[in-house]
Image (tube, rainbow, N blue to C red; front, side):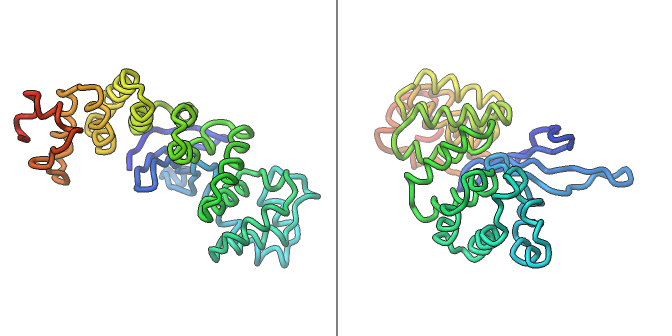
Length: 277
């Protein structure tokens, strides 16, 4: 987890954080509120999908509250025409999501009016269910339509893995670029961009991109790990050496005796590899 900076949005103050996990790179804005001179966190929003904690909790309560307050769904799902919001179907959607009934989620979403289905929170729930079910084409269609509707960075990063699997390097790179426009230049995103450029055969461009990432965060594990492959491809042996040293410094990595195969042959022939031969 890395703290990025303070940002203002919707007349609120947020502390922005980057998370790097097995599932990828995420950005969260933690909403801050002053109380008696002390700051506290009161919610968060996921910059990839446009969801926030308060809306999520309100939606989870929908199946119960709508039984006594028919207008609750209208207030929770702001942005759709009131006449088009059906509390019963939204309640089913949230219940299916809560119980992990992904086919139920998809079935409910496909019956919804377009203006309701296209709300950011509903789109996020729908897309997640499609991805979990392996309905890749439908998932891509939903996310591409969302990208066309919502400003960056919303939904951009969700398409990267799909485009990579299809070897659509330009589209994957464009998604990263557009996401970065919404969250500022970031070393981890640049490292991901560089890896995409290498996969697409754009070695010089990838080299420039990874050098920028390493300038921003030379001690970031993710950047160094991604950087090694890019730097090997660019024959930047000094850069490879520096990334290996930084990774070994963490105590989590040991490259000695493991630099084998064609991938490492160029580096092993260079003087920079002496400590690992």
